[in-house]
Length: 199
Length: 199
Image (tube, rainbow over all chains, first blue to last red; front, side):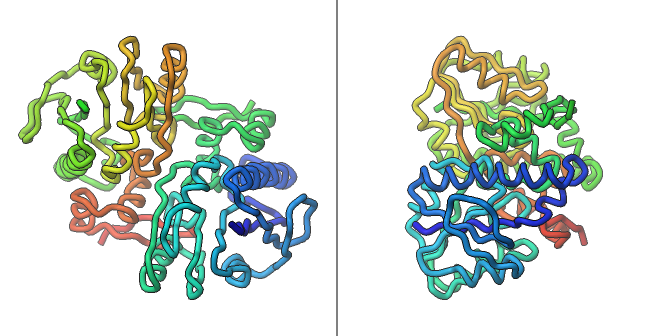
């Protein structure tokens, strides 16, 4: 399965700016990308980077500096999956579930209503990542044919904000979790949920 | 499968007090409980309520006003599942995955490090719901035998805070989602994630 992985090469993860400086955010986003590429490969997928600027990586790459929606639609052919680069908790099993669902369009929602991974076998399907894309994608795909939804906490957990780092420290075992722990982050207990602290 | 469902009958869901008054929180928590009981039954489970005070419900009930950890441990026998009552997105499929995992202890983590559902076939296993229970449960269970972890966004989504209501409005189709919509809540778009508004 061809798997397009969009990646913002310049100034990534701005919503983590309160806890990571620009260089740290670049390194951390590369670590997350490494985790995603490994999970995709272990699931039997063939990843292709769709980057906003050239970067050094051992994976086929298209550079497209247009906004995400336009760039993904230009790359979208039938039998293409799109997996976001900020899913360091993605497992091969969860990606396989995306590949194996026998529907024309398969969606893995992100927390907050985004679409963290999708697979399209439907030539007419187009993405629109603005403003709660999951509901729009589900509606559009339903008009075109069959739709499947993957129920995965790991695929639902895109790392955008400091609160998301908690999930990575709880469940992560890959490059991004290691990077975060090496950078001094650790779990602290606050009320009944865990939060993050930094040494 | 015997499934214990703990339920706080008095002043439930205090962290929703900024958006729901006490009577609304009682009604909403009962609607969530109804969704959970239905999903458990459809998965082939036999639910038993473990309530802090008597309430009117068509399900076997134990009343135990001790804190959650003590009450659950008193109810825990081998071949028992414990499913929280604030999981209105729980599907029969996700509950079945919990039942079907062939491990001595099976855990479904909640966002933020809690344990939203578990199954124990291990006589020595005891719960401790304080402060990031998932990591503690996984460690304890691992010392006793085999451990499985269920990867489910629906089971990970316990409804504690206003931000959690977003997930219910996006994905919910049961009593609790209906209750919330009837109470005037709707999705509003804020940055790239969805939020809630009330008419």
